[in-house]
Image 1 (cartoon, rainbow, N blue to C red):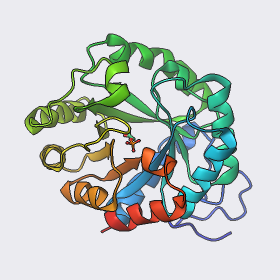
Image 2: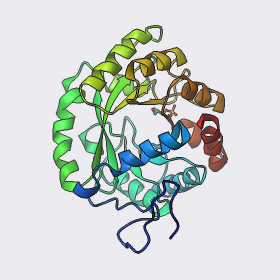
Image 3: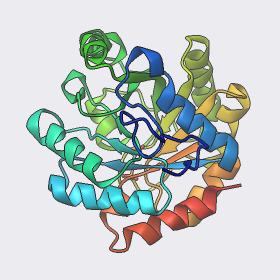
Image 4: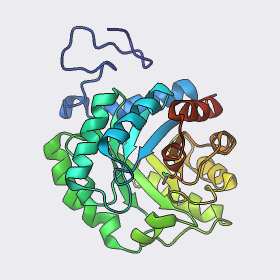
Length: 277
Ligand code: 1GP
């Protein structure tokens, strides 16, 4: 079995996948997905993640998208959405995706109902600018028990929603960060860092017409320094992805651009080329 792009080899170990990762060995490999993402960032400058909403296609089609995205160079598959995500549909989608690719599958939850035992890891989100305690602590408390029993890896993520915010802004009852106030976004991001979160996620909302403003990304990254910054929402072109990466995004997330594109592998490869150092 060949060494992976991350320099690991799973040779001789039946419990590992082709990335050399023992994805289900809870305690021992607690930070393995996080290290994989960090390794990608230190090698390539900025990495790409593909978001698949299980509510937008059949599990079989989701698996095809994931396989093509992985072939195009995406580092991991995020599975999530704001409405209608959970139960059998989610489980079936994650299971099918895992048959089509060895890249990690990470849950991008909307609430406790999105915790899924078949995934490798979960973005353990705190929606810092929500007005609703359910998105600040209650879903986290209810979900934590499942995450532990499933042996999933939680990645601590401070989630910050920026105007226009889209569906997630409404569902999450977010007090949206004004687009012309990068200093407010930077203050929230710094709060997330000081609360101990190793990943900060600036979200404009899925399918929105404008991405997070590059100037806001710059201000947030300047405040965060080495804490990792994820940016998503409304990214449709290579140019937009490149600009956000140059502004300081360590991770670029796209969802809609892939759902709407026919040549998914090439679409993702374009994003990956645009953001790499
Ligand atoms: C992830 O919500 C985004 O942060 C995905 O947004 O669907 O617009 O790519 P798009």
